Figure 1 (spheres, helix red, strand yellow):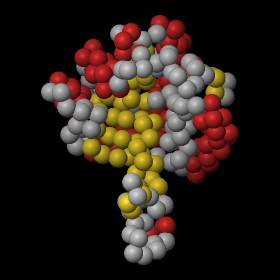
Figure 2 (spheres, rainbow, N blue to C red):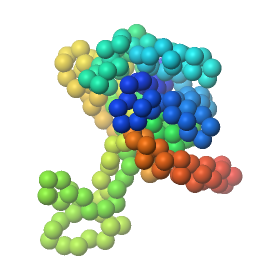
Figure 3 (cartoon, rainbow, N blue to C red):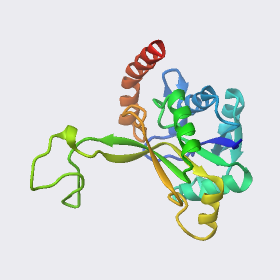
Figure 4 (spheres, rainbow, N blue to C red):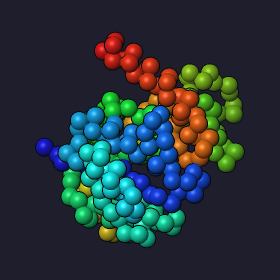
Length: 231
């Protein structure tokens, strides 16, 4: 059976929203919501918080997760996700790594579990959470999923998939092989896409994003309970 690790990145020095991962959200820090969702999904062999700052170590211990301290230079504004993911994988062997972002607090444990099962069954090397947009989309003035020659009803459009990074999965061997070879590891190998709803795909980068997530929490919570009752 594949060993699956959940890794929650938590950089202290966020610029647009200070101490973003520790911001209170409906009674708990954002980082605590992420850990609890991962544990509730009951599908990971290990759950880790990955940070350059020791302040997250007691949070991990309290919530029942483990703490990985990355090098200090991998927590500054110039560090890339590829760098800290590779550093984590060099220290923790697994078959599949799932990065679960604390800044997507409306992602449910059920959705995390569904994502993990879909990647495991699908044999992907990289797996991205996406929100599907059924609207006319353009890029640099050119239509992406429609034609200027005709008007198409939105329900008939091929949806554009917006990568939201709420949860991402990588195969250990594929990621490290690409990184070692100097290639982009984030999209290495066979890439797959998993649609999540708009609330799950809402990520917090600014105070406004946090305010919106707080407003949406009640709706998401009620929706989850309705689904559990109907199931």
